[in-house]
Each structure stands twice: as structure tokens, then as C-alpha cells.
Length: 282
Image (tube, rainbow, N blue to C red; front, side, top):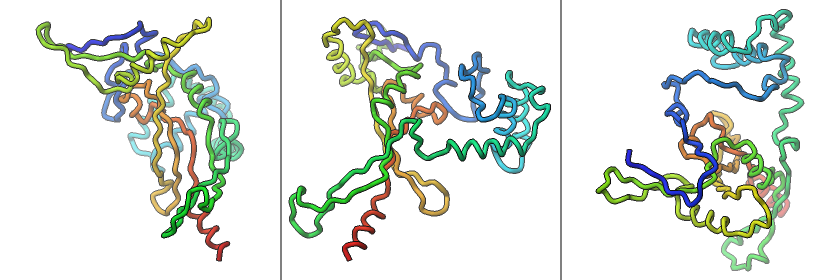
């Protein structure tokens, strides 16, 4: 296609090598190739005793309450034909017992921000504006906001890199040159093809290694925040802060099923705190 890359150093791996359109697009209209490998996670079916029970309960709760022919087809394709489905596991199967097991498990582990997942609760102070009054910021009244849940940034970054399978660890410059006589045109489009990324990696490469033989790479962090409604009706909402890695292609990062978003923090509503302050002042 006339595209080529220029690296300052040989990359450890190329995450895009061997990728097809099915790996970068996510839509029900595309036929997906059969998976050639299975997850290495052995307890993905928790809290159930086996994968067979998990698949049945998952099918029960998936989709509409009235099962259609499409849902029946999913039952056959995703449950009955699954490699880990074992009819012998259903010998003493009880739908009520298994749904009760799920309810009990969720009640015990479904805390909104469990400490086991690295969540911390903090209190922050913000300065309130002085309406129609000139006031130095240091003299402005303070409002204490409690219930700020967050995870440590280093923990999120470390966890992301530990599980990374398609991170670009070396930036490159991409050019388009359709013919030998054509001038090379610089192409942009990814975080790791930018000049800023290239320059930062060069600075990192020039740092003294002090005997460290591990590869040194840039961890590109992209932060995003926007209010999220929790229901179609009512005003219940959250204001999360998401972390994305710029080391991942934007096409893969934008796929809902890629799970590329990492929850970093949740901002509580300030309005109720201000209401309390005004109530106390009166």
C-alpha cells in the first residue's frame, strides 16, 4: 500500500502483526473466526462449580426475558457446543440453587469499590467562589468533599502493563510513498506515531541504565471523564475518570469488547455538599 515505518530502535514485538479486520472492528454484522485458543483463567465460572453451570445461568440472564429463535441459536452455539460444556455436570443441576448461589456471591463481593481491587476512599477540599466579592483564593471558604473513591495511578499502570498483549513499546514514524518517484509523506494517526512520543522515548533511551537490562518504554496515559447516567429514567448518575493507554491502537481501544478502559476514580456530586453548607449557614 506504499506505507512503511521508521523506528529508532528495533521493536520488541509488533502487536499489529497478523491482525485482521475482525480484530479491529466490533459489530454483530461481521462473521467472527473461531477462536483457536482458550483463556488461561481457570476460575472464570466463579461462583459456580463448573463452566457448564456458568454457561447455562449466563444464557438465562442474557437477552430478553422471552427467548427468541436467535437466543435459542445462541444457546446451542455458545453453550451446548462449547468445548468446556459437560452434560455430566448437570446430573444434580438445580436452577434455583444456582441462581441463589449467584445472588449470595454478588451480595458478598459486589461492593461498589472493593479494597481488594485497590480502591481507596479519600476526602478533598476545594475553594468556593466568592460571588461578587473580590477575595484571594487562600481566603476563600473551603468545602470538604468526602466519598472520593480512587485507585493509585501507579497500580493501574502496573496492572495494565502486566496484562498487556498488544502494547506498542517503541514509537515509529509512518510514511506513505506509493511509487519510487513519489515523495514520502508523513502519516499521523496513532499516539505512538507522534513527534512528542518519539522525542520522549529518545530522552528515556539516553537515561543512565545503572546496570538495568530490562527494556525501558514510555507508558502513554490518556485520561477521560464524563457524566454517566445509571438508568434510562431518573437522575442517578456517576462521574467516572477513565484511564486509557496510548500504547494501544485507537481502533482496538475504541472497541467496547476490548475492555481498554481502566477505572481510575469516581467524582461525587458536589451539589449535595453545597446544600449542606448553605443549610448550616442559615
